Image 1 (cartoon, helix red, strand yellow):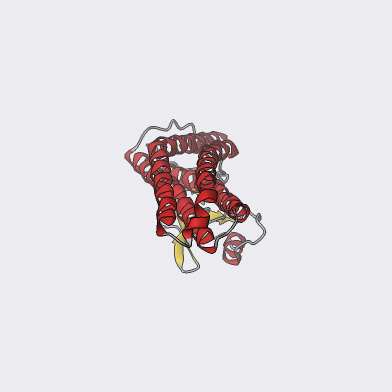
Image 2 (cartoon, one colour):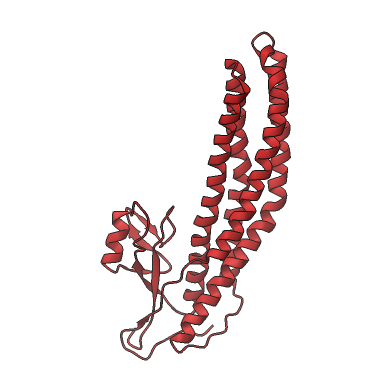
Length: 269
């Protein structure tokens, strides 16, 4: 791959690369559709059995075991469902995120006088595999956490002799939490994967450093990130910026919208 050099002594910065809203929206829809499907199934089967079983729980252990059996079956069913789609869903998302990152970087390079045709590389394949593996794990974690919480809510309500209305409200709350988590995964991973793929591609072009740029967005910006942007913190792409006691990249922390301005080396570099 061509190693970039600009025609100035000090080098030149490229524009920050930003995540694609369409890629995020597609991933979010795929995840939240699964969550909605799972929640509807769980609601149906829990409610169908809860009303007739709860009055017996305090006097007899067997109804409690019936509830346990129902939750075990639901957990097995939805664990299998998410496992079946996780690999393909993660690979498709990473491929879309990479395509956007490559297209955005290529256009910016063209605007700066560099006509580069990207080719597959071992580094890009490895980064794509790492990103896909992380997303597979996140996708599989969705039903595990949701069904664990639902199970606890069902058993606790049954032992208290709680009414179906109270349990229904609790299930709705658990669904809301899980739905928001799925949306967060899509938003957070869209930033992280796009940043990682772009950074890997930039290093393949001989770009070694970037400048931290704060997003000036969000209700509760991290003061350390604001300072990094204000100071135009320069960091190595293979190492990251040392902020708050750790080496990080823009967008790698939860809800971080910061970006980077990569530096094309000059002829004195």
